[in-house]
Image (cartoon, rainbow over the protein chains, first blue to last red):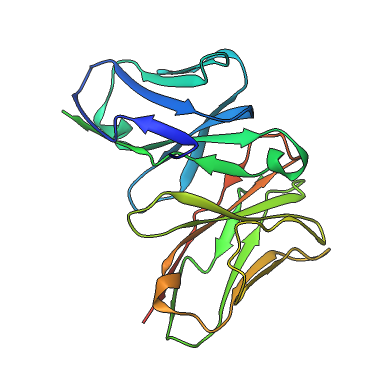
Length: 112
Length: 113
């Protein structure tokens, strides 16, 4: 079993829909990261959080440390949001702080 | 402030050749991480370096792979005697300290013929 699991693996939506991507992890973490990767492109860090909730524009990330679960929400989705969304965690202890462990990614396609 | 820079963006090598991938971190960042993304697979940690030191290389294959981050100049990921299975996208990230947000470079796509 992977230490970081994302669901769904694939997600298709119509423009304007509210989108939720989930991430569960099985280890103690120092922080959880949400990343965005466009096809053939680089990786952008969207959020880093260790508790509560963060918001940036139409994106919202939440984390529940007790349940070892995080969600990424996109409000009023747009075709330009189409990308792979990746959850990653950094763990406690020594050199583990810097090293990210990744989920398998969620492929999001938003149709006009 | 320029972002993380990687070069080359695309690299083609024949089996048995050496590949050198370069990463220049963001200004002020002394922590560098290398990750590999194999075709149709997720990202995997390879190595974490801080100026002149390897902090964690637990994700590096035991043979043919090495990494450095000298006092001056970019971080280098070196793959000797490349094989087809080394074909992948290699991403570098940097941060100001070990618990800060990591900023990713555009990646180097290595193709081994």
